[in-house]
Image (cartoon, rainbow, N blue to C red; front, side, top):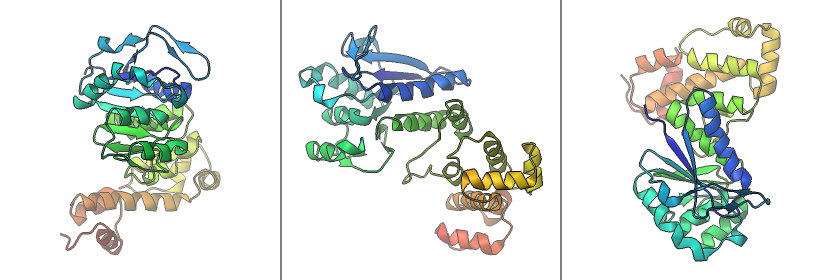
Length: 309
């Protein structure tokens, strides 16, 4: 399988964290066994960093031809120092990248660059909370959303800025290699996995992983992969070499809910997902571990299902 490319686009006066956060996710993905080819391009041979550093040996735009399988990430920059006289040096290149179907992403203020290129016209999008009003004012055709970590519209992604570039990059890694692998990358980076609360990927599993306790992560992973089976606290405690009492207390402390509540919510979420996909009640019960017909029929109503076979 060909290694997927991630091309990082650097403006002059780029914000270091907007770039480094996403870079680290894809780099760590390689360390965990799923490598990406990382490339760095710019309209300038040397791009300054807003904090006073600089990047050299950047590839010129014409040296990289974007394909539909590529990820292009534009890092945010200091808007007060943006030289619009140079816009035509890069606008056609970015537009061509989007037209190929490549995954085009902006971090923080780089959303303004996508807007200048016309790529946000008619699209839901976001940027750093301090700039959402300005983005909407200057680009009224864009549908600017507030309080979102990142927003997807077809192959165009915009993120709110700084650390949310990490969230977006983890999401892309998850799309390529699955949630378990994305959790592994996040764990190696010693960060939380967050997701946009308005998006479907905000699962029960993710909502209660806002911690870095390895034992509880092991328990959560085990539960997620054994939902159809009988799961006892004693078995979970043995898995992480703990007493049942200590695990019960630890799990509630770091997740905010009990182990029993967590299992119940995961099973309900799984059942609801399968019901929405149109699966029969018997298969939903077998796959989710929910044996109560009454509970399943209640979930079916939430899923908008009528009669169930």
